[in-house]
Image (cartoon, rainbow, N blue to C red; front, top):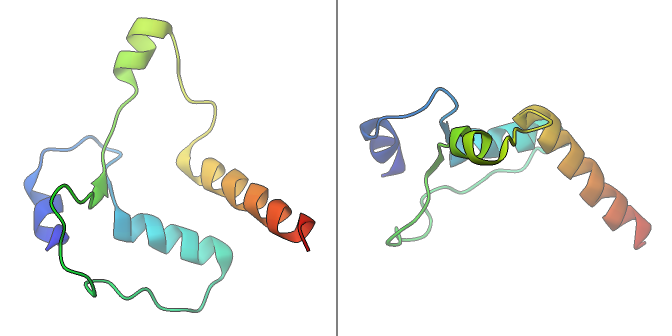
Length: 88
Protein backbone atom coordinates (compact mmCIF):
# COMPACT_ATOMS: atom_id res chain seq x y z
CA UNK A 1 0.00 0.00 0.00
CA UNK A 2 0.86 3.68 -0.09
CA UNK A 3 2.63 3.72 3.28
CA UNK A 4 5.35 1.49 1.85
CA UNK A 5 5.50 3.62 -1.28
CA UNK A 6 5.70 6.78 0.80
CA UNK A 7 8.67 5.52 2.76
CA UNK A 8 10.56 4.26 -0.28
CA UNK A 9 11.12 7.56 -2.08
CA UNK A 10 13.68 10.21 -1.16
CA UNK A 11 11.86 13.28 -0.01
CA UNK A 12 12.09 16.93 0.83
CA UNK A 13 11.46 18.04 4.38
CA UNK A 14 7.90 19.00 3.47
CA UNK A 15 6.77 15.54 2.28
CA UNK A 16 3.23 14.78 3.41
CA UNK A 17 1.10 11.68 2.85
CA UNK A 18 -2.43 12.17 1.60
CA UNK A 19 -3.58 10.48 4.82
CA UNK A 20 -1.75 13.08 6.96
CA UNK A 21 -3.17 15.90 4.82
CA UNK A 22 -6.66 14.47 5.29
CA UNK A 23 -6.06 14.27 9.06
CA UNK A 24 -5.15 17.97 9.09
CA UNK A 25 -8.36 18.89 7.24
CA UNK A 26 -10.48 16.64 9.48
CA UNK A 27 -9.04 18.32 12.57
CA UNK A 28 -9.58 21.83 11.18
CA UNK A 29 -13.19 20.98 10.33
CA UNK A 30 -13.73 19.29 13.68
CA UNK A 31 -15.25 16.43 11.67
CA UNK A 32 -16.11 13.23 13.52
CA UNK A 33 -16.69 11.02 10.49
CA UNK A 34 -14.43 8.26 9.29
CA UNK A 35 -12.37 8.06 6.12
CA UNK A 36 -12.49 4.54 4.70
CA UNK A 37 -8.97 4.04 3.38
CA UNK A 38 -8.29 1.04 1.18
CA UNK A 39 -11.88 0.48 0.05
CA UNK A 40 -11.02 0.90 -3.64
CA UNK A 41 -8.41 -0.99 -5.66
CA UNK A 42 -5.13 0.83 -6.19
CA UNK A 43 -4.95 2.68 -9.51
CA UNK A 44 -1.86 3.17 -11.67
CA UNK A 45 -0.43 6.62 -11.11
CA UNK A 46 -2.32 7.13 -7.84
CA UNK A 47 -0.88 9.93 -5.71
CA UNK A 48 -0.22 8.82 -2.14
CA UNK A 49 1.89 11.68 -0.93
CA UNK A 50 2.70 15.31 -1.66
CA UNK A 51 6.35 16.10 -1.96
CA UNK A 52 7.45 19.29 -3.61
CA UNK A 53 9.68 22.30 -3.52
CA UNK A 54 9.29 25.69 -5.11
CA UNK A 55 13.06 26.08 -5.70
CA UNK A 56 12.76 26.08 -9.52
CA UNK A 57 9.98 28.69 -9.46
CA UNK A 58 11.99 30.85 -7.09
CA UNK A 59 15.12 30.52 -9.20
CA UNK A 60 13.34 31.15 -12.52
CA UNK A 61 10.67 33.69 -11.60
CA UNK A 62 11.52 34.88 -8.11
CA UNK A 63 8.25 33.36 -6.86
CA UNK A 64 7.74 32.11 -3.36
CA UNK A 65 4.62 31.17 -1.42
CA UNK A 66 2.89 33.87 0.59
CA UNK A 67 1.40 31.46 3.12
CA UNK A 68 2.33 28.11 4.62
CA UNK A 69 0.26 24.94 4.30
CA UNK A 70 -1.67 25.44 7.56
CA UNK A 71 -2.66 29.00 6.61
CA UNK A 72 -3.53 27.89 3.07
CA UNK A 73 -5.79 25.16 4.41
CA UNK A 74 -7.50 27.64 6.75
CA UNK A 75 -8.03 30.08 3.88
CA UNK A 76 -9.40 27.34 1.60
CA UNK A 77 -11.79 26.06 4.28
CA UNK A 78 -13.01 29.61 5.00
CA UNK A 79 -13.51 30.22 1.27
CA UNK A 80 -15.62 27.10 0.80
CA UNK A 81 -17.58 27.68 3.99
CA UNK A 82 -18.50 31.16 2.73
CA UNK A 83 -19.54 29.72 -0.65
CA UNK A 84 -21.66 27.02 0.97
CA UNK A 85 -23.27 29.33 3.52
CA UNK A 86 -23.72 32.07 0.91
CA UNK A 87 -25.71 29.68 -1.29
CA UNK A 88 -28.18 28.77 1.46
